[in-house]
Image 1 (spheres, rainbow, N blue to C red):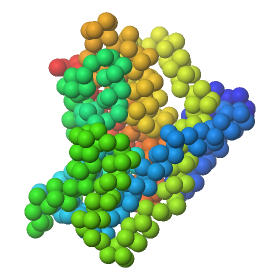
Image 2: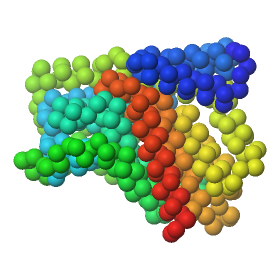
Image 3: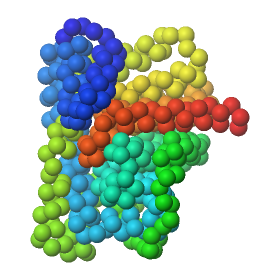
Image 4: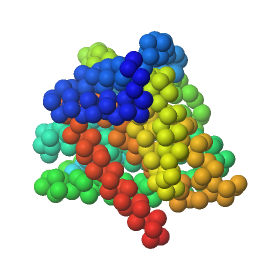
Length: 399
């Protein structure tokens, strides 16, 4: 360890990842470079060992389990044609509509690395039919997969933020939903120059096929949020019912398990988890918060930047809610009175920071699956973040 500030170490690691990606390195290799730079600059030997040990904690192990089970469901849906039904049903409304609608529909069910499911479903539509380049396909899939984070009460960040401010999640959503609308608009504006050249006419399928093909996701939502089953049990039961209902052939089962067992997914996942653990062990979140809070910064900018940087560093929407929101509670609220403009800025900051994180599993997995340069995909994400932020400022100022 060279004793460099964790904040500077993170910035240096992020830049190395971007440069490696621009040079054509894949996600697995680029993240490895980022980890190496950060570890050398800002992590002690004890901290590195602690980060490795934390990989064996249930919190990290269950993420691996969830990813494997989610990928098994995706593989079975792919092999049995259910993913094709979702895509064809959305395409019946319009081809451009399907580009955003399929990731968004799958995004209604929060699960780790869920954008890989929509990436698999949309690969032929993006690559073969529309001939999008890998970076644009990665951006569209990643961006629209997450547009519901500010307005869907099933996301952990909504639940955690509601708990911090001691309000009902429905009340929070009643005030944060504009972020979703603005994010959809921003994604459409950034994508429009490319997508206007794509034939927008729908296909011959029926729109109802989209819902019929998505029944495993609907079932998961019912089990988790209706029957309050743990995600582990809900995923297990969904796999069993999916096999019973679709009766896949032996070849289809092998294909699904082969898809779910791609070693690169789990190496990349372990890298992302290790980097998250290194940040915690080195005290990066604490330093980031202290740095911003000690500066004489305009309060609106402060409540946006603190969650943004924490979301950027960890790549998890639950992380910014659990760390930044308690810290900003007294700034955003006075007793039971909440300044909803500041809440909008804080939640948008955390949400958008997560979207640009180099260890956000969704963009990492999607860029790897599409063989995209992650730096270019992140640049498109940053463009959409800039548009969303500008629209949000205008919304708060004018409304």
